[in-house]
Image (tube, rainbow, N blue to C red; front, top):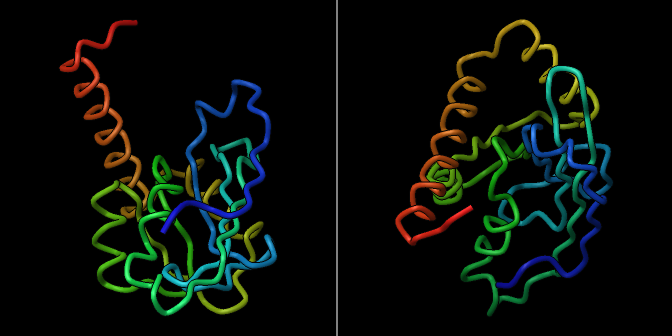
Length: 158
């Protein structure tokens, strides 16, 4: 499966580089209402303890039975660099693949509002991150450092 069929990307003002990327499986950009594997759209925000910035809204086409074999590839590629993805459910294979990329899947209850989840995340950042958030931040930093190590090994110069 390829990437999204439609994508809105907010122009980067340079400040988003310091924000943590967090994704939400949402059909309406207000509620987390989709299973990760079958999600038709994701909203990605940049977040820190004080700021929130919409970064990307991506929509995926409905899959036929023939195309459902590797439906996760495009979604995983889209979420690369995120520390977490909030969804209604996530299968074991998807959980494993997300964690390998340094992305923490977070299962939420029905009716979970994105704005409230972001508020809660920011509160947690101000008070000191919980165990899952601290691990996700650390895992994401480690993944970023591995990417720089690979670039250096390839002879990348600034």
